[in-house]
Image (cartoon, rainbow over all chains, first blue to last red):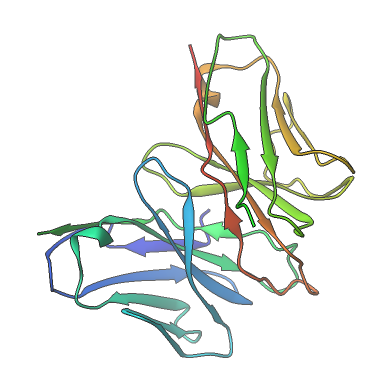
Length: 112
Length: 117
C-alpha cells in the first residue's frame, strides 16, 4: 500500500488565497519531500524536511511535519495561477536504499 | 549543468514489441532511480541503480522488465513483449549520493510516455 496518502485529492481556490495540502504516512521516515508536477511534465523538487525538523519555509511555501501523527502539510501562501499543478509528498524511510514512496497527489487549481 | 535527460519523450509500440527507455543522469550523479506513473496516480518506484549495479529492484515486475546502468552511457529501462497495461509515463531521477540511506533531493527527468497499441 502507499506510504503517503494525500488529501484533498483536488483543490480549487482563487488567486491570492492560501492552499493547504496534507500528507499522511505509515512507517517511520528519514525525511519527507514535496514535489510539484505540471501537466505532462516531470517532477520539480520543492522542499525536503528531515524527521527531526518540525517546520521549514521556502519562499511562499511552508511545510510542517508531525512525526507523532505521521503527517505533513504543505501551505502555499498568496497563491498564483502559475501554482496550478499536482503536488506530491514522497517519503524516504530509515535504512532504505534511497527510493522515494509517493502519495497519490493533490491537484491544485488556482483561478485567476 | 544539464538536467536529467530522458529519451525518447514519447514512444509508441505495438503489443509484443520491445521498448527501450534511456536516462542520462545529471553530471556527477551516480544514483539513478526509475519510476512509473499511471494517469491520475502518483509515481511508483521500480528500480534503483548505481553504476554497473542494481541496488534495489523491489518495484520491478518479475517478467519482461529489466534495467541497467553501464559504466559508460545512459541507464536503460527495457520492457520486452509490451502489453497495453505497460502504457504509462516512466520517469528517471538521479541524485548525487545516498549517505547511509539519508536522502538528498532527487532530480527528475521529463519522462518517457509509452503508449502500447
